[in-house]
Image (cartoon, rainbow, N blue to C red; front, side):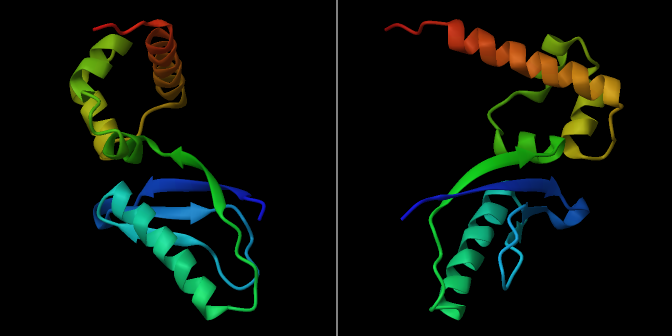
Amino acid sequence: MKKLKVTITITKNGPEGYICTCDYPFEHFDLGGAGSTVEEAKKDCFAFYDEMKEEYPDESFPELEVDWVFDFPSFFNHFDFLNVTKAAKYMGMSPSNFRHYAAGSKNMSQKQFQKVKEAFNRMADELKESTLTM
């Protein structure tokens, strides 16, 4: 069976945690999930998809190929191995402000967001160009 390509966006939902929303217009439901962490929200989303398979047994439910989109706080929740303070310094930003952005307690300007996005692309390029040896 062919895979269905969907985009699932994960966003911080205030103090409630994180929510997933899917861009694909399923006929009988809107695919989504919620949880106190990004991982919990993702699991809830897939559990709901499995529940819908049982709810509508006569319909075809393809395997999902997901493109994940994260807002800033959910990005740092998901990639929790990233050091927020060191990332801020790499980007030439105030670590204090950056921690607020990562926690979702402050919103950054479009200009700051563009600066962050470009810095992450540079980081990714540096990692891809690196060779790890033993």
